[in-house]
Length: 410
Image (tube, rainbow, N blue to C red; front, side):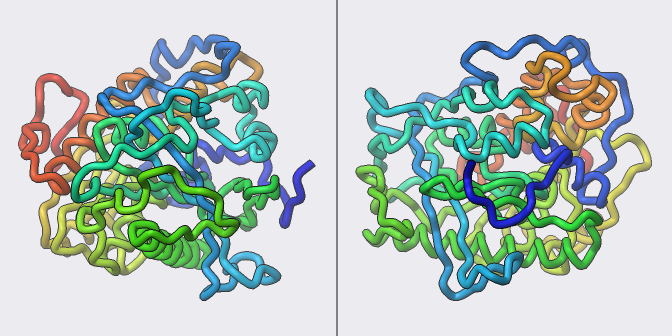
C-alpha cells in the first residue's frame, strides 16, 4: 500500500467536481432527464474505459514531471518544507512505435479515485490514453504554442484528457497540473501518494486560499517550461526528458483553460501573469479579485445549460472589466460535469458502479456525451487557433449550423 501523508478524501464526486457545485463554483446543473445514451450504461471494455480518439493528424507523446518549488513551503501540509507538484506535458510526437501507452491515471492513485467515484478499480487501472510515454518530440521551427490546463476543485491533471489530447493532436503542447493536497490523489515517483486535505465544509476562505495556491503552482510551472526550453531538466530526480523537448515550446504563445475552479484559476493567473496570452473558462464561477478584473487579452466564457434566469454575477463583473476580445457561449443540454472525462466514463460503467441516472442527469445534463466532447473540442481549438496562431475561425463569429448546441450569449 502506498504511503500517504493525509487521510483519503472519501465518497466525494471528484471527477465530476460535485464539491464545486455545492460550494457555488459553477453554474447550477440542469435538472432535466438524462439522455438515452446516458441512461443505458454498458459494461466498459476489458481494456478499461474508452476515451474518444483525437481528431488531429499528430501522434501524441507525453511525459510527467516531479517539480519541487524550494521557494515555498507546502500551503496545505505544514510538515512539508517545499511545495511538490506533478505536471504532465503532452506534445506532438515524431514516432510512437515501441513506446508504451500512458495510463489515464497512475497506478498508485487508482484505489483512491475508484473508491471516491464508485468506479471499478480494475477498469480505471486498465484505462489508457492515446499518448505514448517518452516518445521523441516532433519539433517545429520556432517552437509550438503551449496551453496550460487546470482542473476543477479536487480534480487531478488527467480529468480532461479528452480535450487535452485533441489539442495536442492539432499541434499544441499542453501542460496539465496536479495541485497537490487539493487534488484528490497525486502519485509521485516511487509510489508515494499524497491525498487531498480538503475540509468537510468548503467556505470562501478555503476557496480564496486554493485559488492563490493554484496560481502560484501555475506560474511556477511556466518557469520550469522556460528552464526546459533553455536545456535544463527540472525534474526532481533528473529523470530523462523525451528527445527534442529542449526548445520545443514557443513561450511567446501561451494559452490556458480550466474547468470550474480551474476556469477561475485561468482568469486570475492570466490577469496577474502577462505570459498567458489567451484563456478559456469552462463553467467556473470567478472567485477572486484577479479573476474578475479582466485583461487586455482574449478570453472565452463557456457555460453549461444552467437554465433561464440562472445568472452568475461574477461573469457580469468580469465582462464589464474585460478590455480584450471576449465572448460568452453556452452549451445546450450540458451540466457542470460535462466538461471533463466523467461525461464519457460514467455512462460506460455497469451498475452498481458509477452514478444513478438521476445523479448523472444533474451533472451531465441531456447532451450525448461524445457529442459534447466533439463540440467542446471544436470551440476550444478554434479559440486557441485564432488567438495563438492567428487563424481566424468562423465558429467564433456567429452561431454555426454544424454546432447548433452552442448559443452565443453575448
